[in-house]
Structures are given as C-alpha cells and as structure tokens.
Amino acid sequence: MRDAQFLTAFVRRARQKQPGRHGHSHSHAQHHRHHGEGHAHHQRHAGAGGDWFSGPGGEHGEGGGFGGGFGDDGRAWTRSRKVSADDLQLMLLGLLEKNPSHGYELIKALGALSNGFYTPSPGMVYPALTYLEELGYATVEQEGAKKRYHLAEPGRVHLEGNRERLALMFNKLKHVARKMDWMRQAWSGQPRSVGPEGEDTATGWLPEFVAARQELKRALLDRTDASPAEQRRIAAILARATAEITAKSCS
Image (cartoon, rainbow, N blue to C red):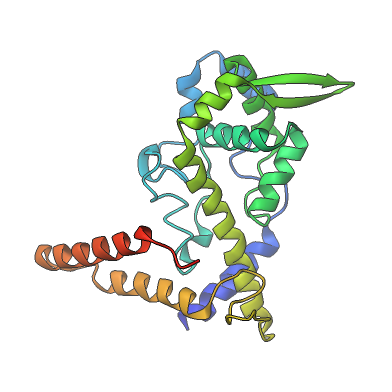
C-alpha cells in the first residue's frame, strides 16, 4: 500500500511539472535589484531551510540534502527542489570545464543530467553566470547576440577545491534521473529489460540493490524512537557498513 501511494503521487507530480516553472526562479531584473547587497544575499537565496545538496541550514557536503534524501525509497519526491545559488554556480563551473557553453545549453545539460527533475530557469542561470564572470571564474565570448561562457583559471582553481562536493551534487542528480526511470517502469507494469547480470538496462540497478536501500530506510524509520543505547548500536552498524562499502568496489 505504501509503495502504491508513492507511485500515485510520483506520477501526479511528474504530470504537473512544467519546464521553466522552477519554484525558486526569479527574473534577471530581480537579481540585479538585489545584487548590490553582495554575495551574502546570493548565498542565502535558497532560503534558510536548506536545499537539495546542502541539507538543513545550508551545510554543504553533509549528504543530508536533496529534500531529505531522494536517495531513499522516494518519499522525498513531494519536497522542495531548491538548489542554493552557491551550488548552482559550482555545477555551472563543472559543466563549463567539460565544454564552453551558452546559457541555454547549460540549462539543458542540467535537465538532461537529472532526467528533467531539475531544470533551472533562465532567471536563475543567467544571473549566476554573470556573477561567475564578475568573480573572474568564467570568461565570455560574444557570438552575435549570444554569449558563450568559458571556464577561467580562477574558476578551475575553485573547482579543484570543491571536487568532492561537486561530484556529490552531480551523483545526486544522476540518482534522481535513475530513480525516475525506475519508478516510471514500475508504474507501466511492463517487464523490465534486464542485462546479463540481471540489472535493469535503463538504470543499471539490480532489484536487490533497490530493495536493500528501501529496507534500510524502513528499518531506520522503525527505530525512530530507539533508546540512546540502541542508537549507538545502530550507528556502529552503519559505520561498519559505510566503511565496507567505501573501502573497495567490485565493479
């Protein structure tokens, strides 16, 4: 029943989503009206409640973001899709490192990376690019009425200092894209196309991998009222599991 309710909410939300109507967007004029307040305002723009990547209060790199974690069994779908200005700037620099791009190409790249779940509006992207140019992190090549942005050396230095954080953000977007493909397939009722190892060809995920993630989340929810002693026991188990997962890979 719980999975069925989520599937219904997932499809309803997907049908309602319209490109360019990101709840966090604002106009170019609005950005420049506030731009004089400095970078502190730019950093706070996502709101004090946290965002996808940063978690509560905008604490970057903690891994608790994404609206409570779309990496779980999907219950966070209905939560906010906010991305802080600082996170957006870093992702844009990461994309520019791969290819010099126009603003609309960067918008499309982020949309493709997340399978349409996160497609920032021009009112967010172009002011962010202007800010990166002002910082000296990006340079602009004028092509008629269009601007092609390039990564500048100071921007590359900034990227080098934030590689782990950027990788986490891009991986979360990729996870969302795969999650959406997995749930669409589940909703369709059609048999999955599987690869030689039994993995879903659309996402690369094994059914037991998805089931294990879901069961872990549910087990933790069942222990939400655990005593301090039980919490310590669970924390130790999770620490051992994390160390084992990150120590080596079979791929």
